[in-house]
Image (cartoon, rainbow, N blue to C red):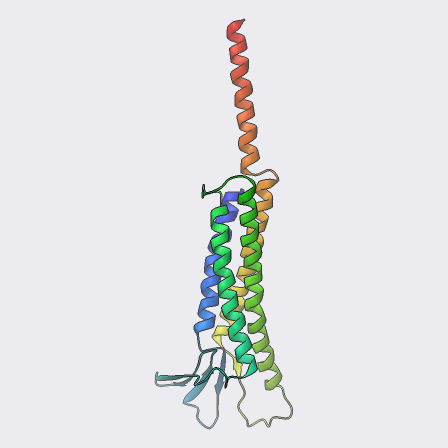
Length: 214
């Protein structure tokens, strides 16, 4: 696989992963809870709102009234997920001019932009994985807390956590692929191959001219 194909694969993964992180940030299914007292209803907890879901298909959501009234965990998760989205967008904007398919710059600046975009992708993925894993850790700790009676309902993993894990992991992979494509192109990829081909063609032309003079 040449550097151009590797860059294209990395950018496709980058965009798909960023969309997963966006979906995880907006979805209210970070944590879910169902009770034995009301089996027809379940509760969902997100970063921006809480929802009550009924088995008949109804769903009612309510946004949080105040930012200051949120718990520290939700505040930290909001900040890190928004930071992940911002860094991901910045990585895409920086990496795009450095692609081989884009002729905005040549040589060293292209590799630098691609490397910076890849590093930003890895940072974005880590920023997403931290709050998702932290909220999952809190859910596990509360679920297996011996101090809480068994009859008390507990929060469990929601779909948004799994989407966040997938998005963060793919962002890290996409960033590493961009960095790998940069070093691959600088260590014997497309540009050196074109230079060698140009040298061979120049040698053939000069040899033909000498033959004509003889």
